[in-house]
Image (cartoon, rainbow, N blue to C red; front, side):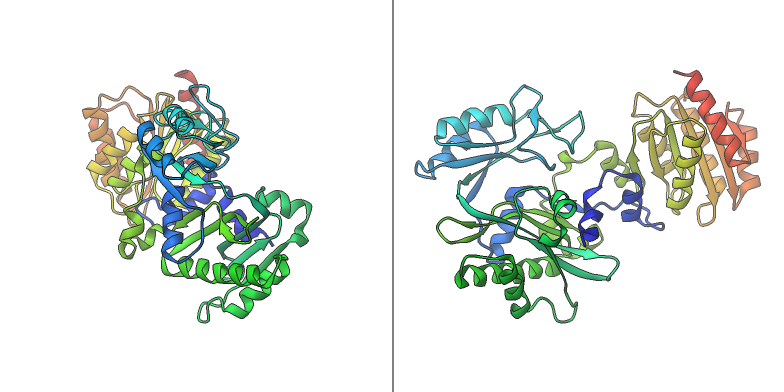
Length: 428
């Protein structure tokens, strides 16, 4: 029931990152995420009701924004692209990225501690992510909290609307402890989500009255409209709330978008915040390289997602730890290969580089030229292990032999992996 949601939850795994990229992708494709205040603005463009919210990018701006709420209770939220902000902590000691406050002075004080500091949550890892803005929002007290999301379900090959009357908590926990509390509704591509179906879902969720059911149903329809028209991969509202004054509101929003649709979603992609993404991955994309950072000490340069996964597995089976996955794709030239080496070596933990290429579309001699170019120009000190098989293989091996470079070349994958693990361990 919850499998569609789980596709988007375990985003840190290499396998899912590769699935996003696809075996033929030359550039790594991640689902674009945007900040909460931008998500709220996009919801409002579709007529979806949310608490009033305004972003601020400095402590003084936060103070001025807070004054606009006329002394009413407000919430200040750190704008960082990670879940678990409320339970996180900043590297300067401030606890929590979400605070209920009452005065503009409190907003200024908290914003001064949040902006420019790194927020560390269960999703960011120990490095955290730097906060460059906060969002000030009116505090609307919920009478009841719900969960709603629109996602793609690969099994049904349709979008689905997932809803529960147990919102404001981890939906995975709800799925585990009370799966009957989750309603999953497939949505026909051609028909979309009709109001009758939406009202039926709202009724099952148990809103307090017909007015609230109608508001909720209208919200469901508009959320699917946003999902469809904006090439979204995820529209998640947790919580959707029925406030004590009888209004149905989207209190929080997590939106994701398909990067393959960037050419027709300029407005959305202009909202991208590259400061929230790994600098190495951003740089790799500029050169047409597909890069995913890992936590080992063997840098990997491979072509094709399937071979990449096999390479990571073989290194692990031989006791090694990959430092990254880097796919040069099928159209890289010698200069791009050199750039790939530069990106791999940005990690201080790399003690060896393993190049594993099966030449099909990508020619082995082009890779060899890039390897030699990188070794010479960068005065490479890290041990280099190379396995080249396929198109122009013999020419590539001749280039490596004639270069005079200290490069360990192998034909077998397992023996090459063992050598890479051995020289990485020796370089510790």
